[in-house]
Image (cartoon, rainbow, N blue to C red; front, side, top):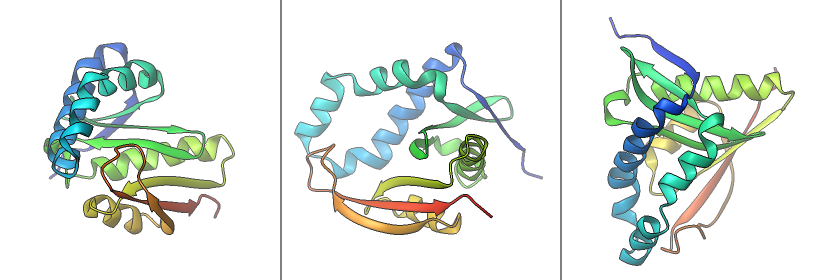
Length: 159
């Protein structure tokens, strides 16, 4: 029987594991899609460290067997990040994190959730579609300057 996923608010002591998860997801998801200049810029500007240090109090983390294997956050009704380590993939971690983020939105009276992923990230696209999100737009991904295309998804949070 699979272990249950536990969702909880992030704690300061989670910082190192959150950075490790970001390094893993950057290496296996993003790095193959990016130009060398974009990769160098990401590391030079310490994007991961700045992101975690700035957003840590807003993260929800997912634990399996007591180990943090994923995290995500939102900014009002926008899911800003969702990262799951390989150890947590295909084990319900992303779904549990999304359910937690959506529950926070509903509690705040937000009626429409939105998020973005890039066209190369087919696993994320399948997840969001399975969770009831609908594609509403495609546009150039200007964050990475690597010629990527972003997909925006939205989902009604009202019954």
